[in-house]
Amino acid sequence: MMRLPRFSYSSPDTPREVVSILAQEGPAAKVVAGGTDLYPNMKRRQVEPAHVVSLRRVQALRGIDWQSDGALRIGPGETLRSIERDSRLKAELPALAAAVESISTPLLRNMGTIGGNLCLDTRCTYVNQSLEWRRAIHNCLKCKGDTCWTAPGSTKCWAVNSSDCVPVMIALGARYTLLGPYGEREIEAEEFYNVDDGREWLTLRPGELLTSILIPPQQGAKSAYLKLRRRGTFDFPVLGVAVRVAEEAGHVARADILLNAVGPAPVRCTEAENALRGAPLEDEQIEAAADLARKRAKPLQNTDFLANWRKKMVPVFVRRALDTLRTAAR
Image (cartoon, rainbow, N blue to C red; front, side):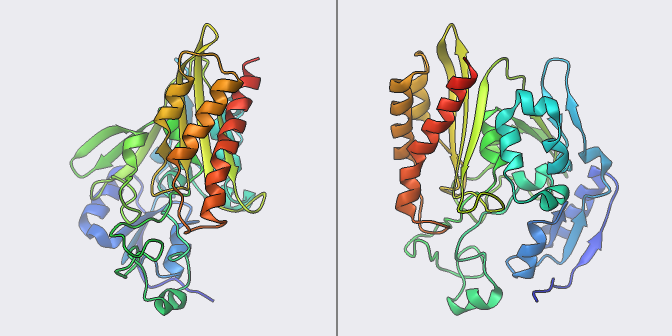
């Protein structure tokens, strides 16, 4: 049985109390909400915080609030299960609903939070193992080692972002509010994720806390999310595809295509997006976008399935996702 390491624990009532504790404890502190990611990582000794700050009593971090203009504000402490049950969200934000419903199992969605999924630690075959297993290969860059076993010549960690909700939030144009020792700031979801290294996968500043998620009005835009995994449930994605298309007069005015689980952060397929703009969403445009998306994907052998096969699945899943939007528009 794997046991948690020793740590001190606090359970404050407000976001400012959380930030104050984080400032006091420094890098040795970690926040926990549902614990479905942090505690397993602690048991494997991937992380060993000296102090854990619980968010369970912080009511200000909860809530699913629809604004009068159609925007949606979600508290990061809201459970995945409660988001899954929001009927309006299912109707207006189908990509987010699909992403949430695909996460793990109902039992874990009862505990896990949307904020936890958006901050999910990057994963890799060589780090998500027991302490003894990692010691046998002398650890890796992400955890107490000096070699990336995925790409031994690299100085960069290639652990992948395995969150289902992250690429969807970026596609939907979400914005995050962060509270830190020096006040509050708001950033685009896309800016929150570090594309350069799986060890520092978030652009959080020291002592900062995610306090709010704002999804702007979609104004008729359609969205979809598809996930590739070995089993039909429970598993993390080995490929996630989030797409969003806004049309005007039967032509694509804006397209967003994001790939996930192929690198430390979601990959935006800019050329594929441009191939769709200004034209109707028809077979020729969809095929061109799917092929261009394939060229942007560069998966490595650090998660389930062969990397080459995962790359071949990129155009298949992009095509399927765009076909879903075309069907929904008719």
